[in-house]
Amino acid sequence: MIFNLWQNTLMKKSSYYFCLVLLLVSCSESSDLDANKGPSFGFHVDRIVRANEGQIEIGTFAALDAEGDAISYSISNTDMSIDNDALVTFNTAPDFETQAEYTAVITASNDGGSDEINLTVYINDSDCEFDTAAALDACVFK
Image 1 (cartoon, rainbow, N blue to C red):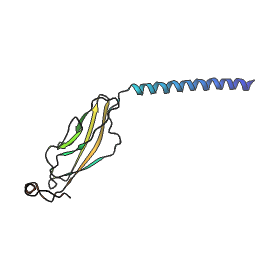
Image 2: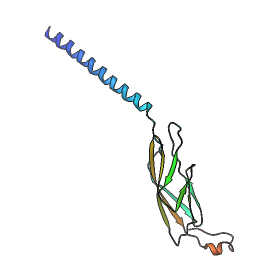
Image 3: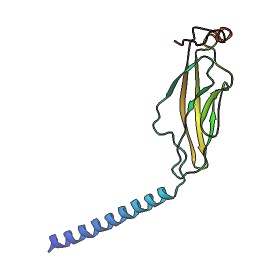
Image 4: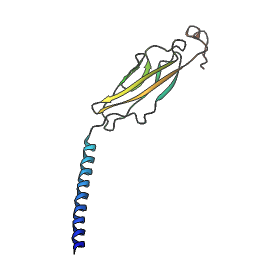
């Protein structure tokens, strides 16, 4: 008899705890579904790019937003710009002899939050300089 009473009490407590856990899990899942999440670049691996001397366009570094909300972009390096389509460009053509490496942090944001990635751009040196490039039909980059 005592064993049956103990077993019934244990089962009632187990059922109670199971219902409580189920309630908490279901509440937390629904609140996650309703939350507006910010954009994401996905994997947080530094982006490394090589660009030739005189090349203005660096590349496109777009984030995704799960809800499809509009994303605005910014970049920390004042030598570069980023447009609404996430295209990063140099403001003036890079010159290897002046600066061979550029770094920046790209931020994607909207009302749901923001995400950041690091960008490093290495400049390829050219065998010909800008003043002789017009006389030579092609330049070799190394």
